[in-house]
Length: 212
Picture 1 (cartoon, rainbow, N blue to C red):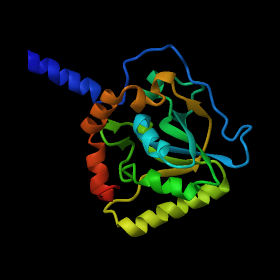
Picture 2: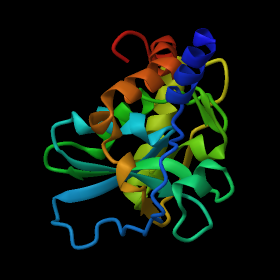
Picture 3: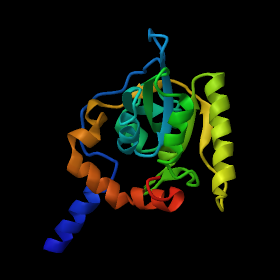
Picture 4: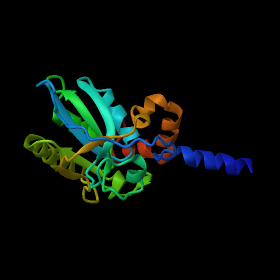
């Protein structure tokens, strides 16, 4: 009986899906609205957004990261609706960065090495189109750089399967509920348990090597 309880606890912790209910719905954020000229926005989907904030937060020149939803058809989606897979949205992070300190090309390098580009409609242990990987570009220059970075990855890595990561125009971005923001800081134990249980770092090492 004790073993069953322990296994159930681990399974509960090893999921990006949260049991918290807030009743809050997301409202769209407008990229680059009233931003200083040196600030720009990048949006990336790489599976569970809890895991996509940390690699960008640690970069010099990144001002903020926001977890949210993008690429769907429903207005003001809630986490429960997105995680159920019926809205067309992907979990994503929107990165605001100082373009005088870090470039979009550098952000792309970090993005690729924190995802599994071969997975179709999933990332690691999370399945469904809401966990697809994608680069959501905000202008033609970002699109050009994203496509060039994808070609570079294809040339360097020689994967045995095609890269499934989408490169698509950014649409309305809805910030996720507050308890999802900086989840790895607010709930470090649950975050680490989920990340380890999901096999994220193990798979990243297989794809990109040590330090990925």
